[in-house]
Length: 171
Image (cartoon, rainbow, N blue to C red; front, side, top):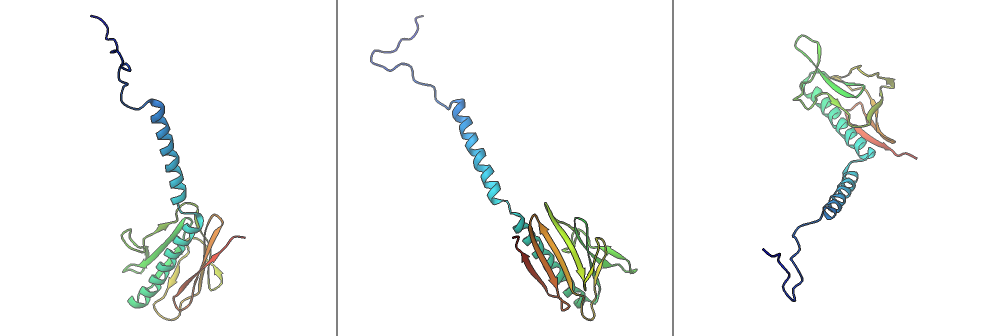
């Protein structure tokens, strides 16, 4: 058999269809760069994380204070080393954490977010100590600092059960 020769006036055999390895690698590199930029842009910064967690804690504290008054049962809250917990009394009078299925479940703070100084009526509350929300009478004034990186949010709970947020802007 004789090898095929290009036809007179033809350009030769047709080129193979597909992409070269270099072309595929360039596309993968571009996709990788775009994905990295998207993750950096979409990931919440320290200020957004601190703000979100402070709003969550403020809402939970207000809810617990209101529920305590409405139910006639004391609810407690405690700052922890890496988050916070809510507590309820059992039938025999002991304190127990709320179950994982509850809105008051124990929470850990994400990333480098931390619960800083907590004060009740001007007295510092160490991690693990419970702050009790009584169903009767005025509540104690709570002040807690929550921060992530150089962003900080101060929660101030009044004796009437409202919690306000104040953002501390770094200089």
